[in-house]
Length: 187
Image 1: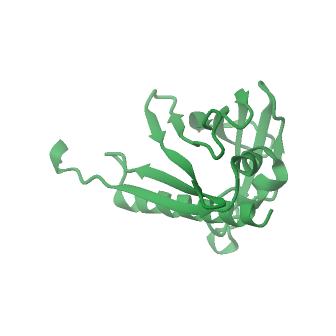
Image 2: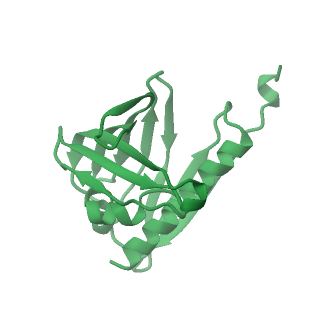
Image 3: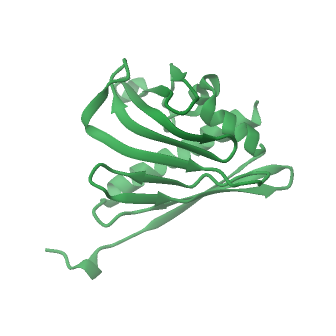
């Protein structure tokens, strides 16, 4: 049995400079054609995305694995709970089937993507609250950087997460930010 103080914990800060204002970052989260261009880890594609962007509206994002990883499609679905344009996007999220029906026990919980008030670039912090009540805070900042933006995402390794899973999560975050950078800089 491992003692609490013997558990190895690591944190990872990922920084990505993106030459785009908060308006484009908002569109990258709220416009289906833009979401499809960046949703998912490196080498994954997003062949479909449906968004009913209103409080109570639903969304359904599809993510397809590369062929060498099986090529399977996975879906995320949820309901928008609160929307304050360019400031806050709060929604539920769960793994789903192609029709948007939740798949148990893969409930991921409620997600908030927070954008800064009256700020040219924004803050994209988000909390993930699992059905168990466990809450994970994911700080993500967007700072002005010359004529563009610098995104800083901090990923915390939780005590019960193996180094392998943490590494995979870090790779997914890095790949997703790289895809977001490409999308926003080519818009």
